[in-house]
Amino acid sequence: MNNLDSINKQDFPASFRVIGVGHGIENVINEINSFGFEGVSAEVVKYPFDCSPNDEDKLAIIVFIDCEDNANNIAKTFHDAGVLTVGLNSDIFPYCYDCVMRDISTTKYPEVIKTLLQPIVTSGMISYDFNDLNTILRDSEYFTVKSTSGNGVKEATEKLGAIFNELELKYVDYLSIHLYFNPNRSLPLTMSEMSSLQQLMSELPETINVLLSVNRDENLKGDEIKLSAILSGKEVWRCQGI
Image (cartoon, rainbow, N blue to C red; front, side, top):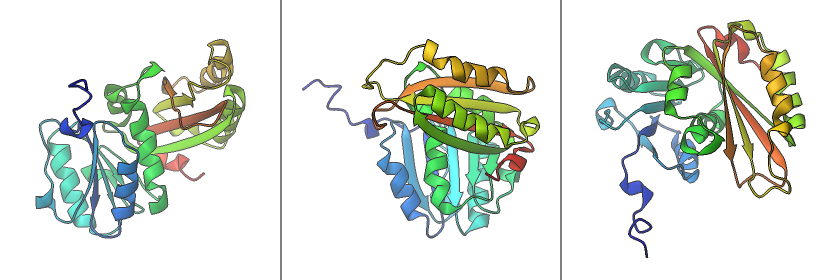
């Protein structure tokens, strides 16, 4: 066996941390761990002294149902250490975080976290890394995510466009769009197939800073295309209601 193959990825320090605080959050953390994302750790803690920043930490995603004071104290510690700090909670406010998503059901936590993490832990045809996520979320106050899929880029793009048409995009400062395809699909993904997505991006308000990534995902079925979008800005909470 190759020595590199014998090294478990968990032997490497995680740069991206998901921290569940308090009670009733265990199932969320277990689902995050089931994603098997390299460089990501997920844990449950009860008190601020249970959790502190490490030199390797770049991103901390804080999720909780109760124990708001403890969660905010942990968030402040990471934020003060220069770690990109993101929070999810139904009634959260951003004063201890770089960026938060509020008015969100606990059942949606794993999906939102996966949308944030998957493009930065996946090597793609058009790459997107932590620095890009940092640009989008650092000091943005609020973010939201939208996802859709279709049988091909055109169908998925039309669905995403319909979602955008229902949003007040004037409140969006940054937008990243992430396309996922199965590398084993019947026909290879081509740049010509991307024309509908490029058209959608060209029609967005010029005030929005737009980033794009194209990523492989072997869990998608056949020719299915998945599109995920991350939108951020100080008034993006106005765009969350769909």
